[in-house]
Image (cartoon, rainbow, N blue to C red):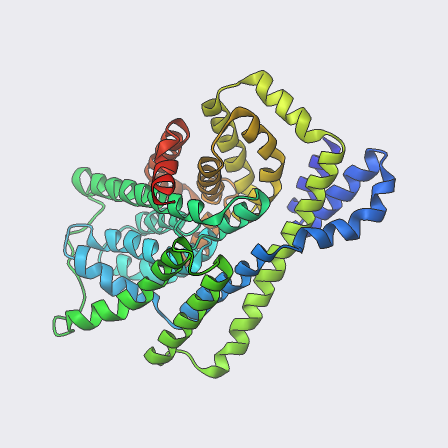
Amino acid sequence: MLTLIVFLALLLIGFPIYAAILCAALLFIFTGGQEILFSSVPLQLYNSLETGSLLAIPLFVLVGEIMNKGGLTQRLIAVTELFVGRFKGGLAYTNLATNALAASILGSAVAQIGVMSRVMIPPMEKQGYDKAFASAVTVSGGLLGPIFPPSMLMIIYSVVAVQPIIPLFIAGVILATLIFFGLCAVVLGFSLFTKQIPETSSHIAPDQPISKVLLDGILPGSIPVVIIVGIAAGVMTPTEAGAVASLIAFILCLIYREIKISDLFEIFLSVCTLTATICGLIATASLLSWALTFQGVPNQIVAMITSMTTSPFWFMVLVIAVLIFLGMFLESISALIVLVPILMPVVKQLGVDPVQFGVVCAVATAIGVLTPPVGPGLFVVMAQTKVKMSPLVKQLTPFLIMVMVILILLAAVPALSTWLPKMVL
């Protein structure tokens, strides 16, 4: 309990997450009377990062950085507007569809919300959408970022849970598609039963060739297809797929002439910074997990949970609640790294499918990023649009309810996340 209190206190006073986890781990070792473990701390930190699968992380981060710098979001918006821009609420559907396409580029809910807030909310306001509603659509669409492959959350989960990545990617496609159509259904409900959605039409220039719009948008959208097909066919490992995707993205950005060789330093610096942050989180969380395991805490958690329920469904519900709570304080990757290693013994004992558990964890942690009072995704969009918390949460609530319904359905019906990976693989 003291370790948890100190951990939360350090987060509240502004400590970096990896530093808070490291302090918590060292405090736990000290208060547990196991000072002899201190001599093994450096070795444990090193061993946690000595895995080849981690090489995929900087490469997929590089894909996102190159594509962001290359300005591909506007091209994706144009493609989606061709299909849904002329419906009532077309720009809201375009927002969600662009989020779905951009999800394979950005991979982080907070990052995606930040980018899409700048790109989508101003034109929605200009066409007469309420700012709070436009912000809610953008924020909810950000949930697709951590789920659509190549999903950084799925990669992190595969590392810490020691699971193959391809079944997780395939399951993520099914889940993200369900969430996308669920969010579209909420927009449809707003358009049918409220006056918040104006009668609008696409603002693509009439003289702009449709073939050019499609070509400009479809080529970037093909990158996740190359990744998934390449890995599933056994032609590429995840690491090699990340390298190939980075090369394709760079070539496309050079063709579009929106990126220069001089931009590479800034891109590589951003990749190095984010990779170092993720690796720091993995190393310190692994240290904490190792210390907890040495003291038998996972076994105690297994005993406590199994004494409360032996039902896989109710176990999943408990995990969802905990992850949503943690997501209010931590970025989704951090919450996943902290909790998954501790819960994997319970997953195995209750017979929960690791693929189902992985996709449920990914969505639950992302939901926490959007829930008040401290969901970081909310503050990102509030800072950029100056919308207040109360109207934003009011408009966001139907979207969150829809996602939670899908999440509970996923926990109740394992086949929703496992049938396609089993059929393909």
